[in-house]
Length: 415
Image 1 (cartoon, rainbow, N blue to C red):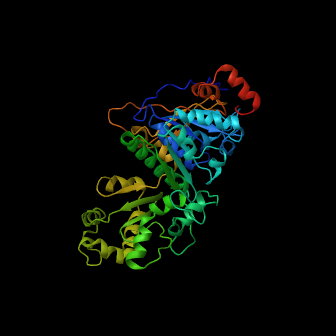
Image 2 (tube, helix red, strand yellow):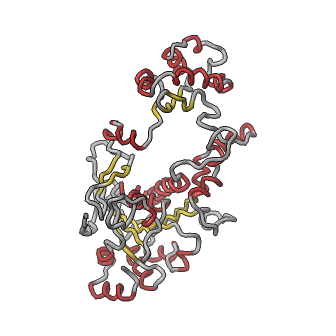
Image 3 (cartoon, rainbow, N blue to C red):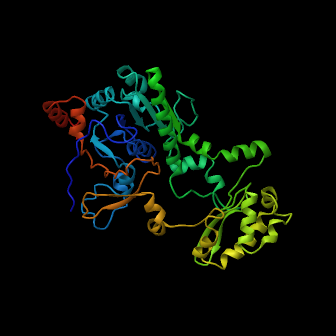
């Protein structure tokens, strides 16, 4: 079994966000994914969990040889590169720990419903009195009344609800079929990315203003913003887009086609790509066919385009298709996890992290950050923290002495 010694929290980490300190009060996926992005870029992220831990700790998946089961793959993946402490915010002493941490921090991220943090004495205005430069980022299902009071603002939300209400489910799935949830939790991940961007914009503004900001990202809003196409389609044409299958409402060809051994994605909406594709598949005359001459023409006859290309791809393997079309037009196989992990691109781009997992003798693999910097060395990830692993380090950072820490533990305010 792997045993681990807590790593002291360094004064600064490496990376472009080195020197920034983040107090992470978030849980589940949206908030932790946001702070994971900041941690990957070098920020020192202190994850504060309640005594029972983040709700994702026991959700798995767990490896068969995990003898500890301190957390599963879900928690490991989005809480890498963070330091973990347990603080009970519902106690006066625990709330004071957070206030003392905030005094020396740059950013706070939370994803509670509106009003929760204020009741704990940890709302933005309360913390800004302690640290006027604090950038306070909230990721909520329906936003915060500070930036626009939604009629749903007190509703809880999860990924599938945000996907549904923001329009993503309504355009996903087989044509004419029921709405379909996307595979990844985009209802959480999209707001997380917007929140990280907004947070860094506020940090940049602080350099000149000297003051922090309250940054508010709604899960509903983030999905809607990412489904921007349905808005202009309705505004320009009065249409109400429905499930699109694997095709595209205004680009053709832009679809997934059958191959002899699976599926292949193929897109050639530009006229030059279309002509090149027609020649490559042995149908050069289609490049001059008035039904297919422009993208607008092809979109009007997308069923015929799909039939022609589908018959050609169905007779060939994915390897044969990519060997012929790769580099000529946008094309790629529909990968699964096993083929992704075997793809040389993924290894050349350092898109996999090997991290230790407490309770296991072998390392596990998680996805790495897609953000790369020229001239920068590839930095290996640190595993996610055990529950309360760095509590003492965090308390010392906040100015607590040994006797103070003993008393906080005795009172149950920290673990």
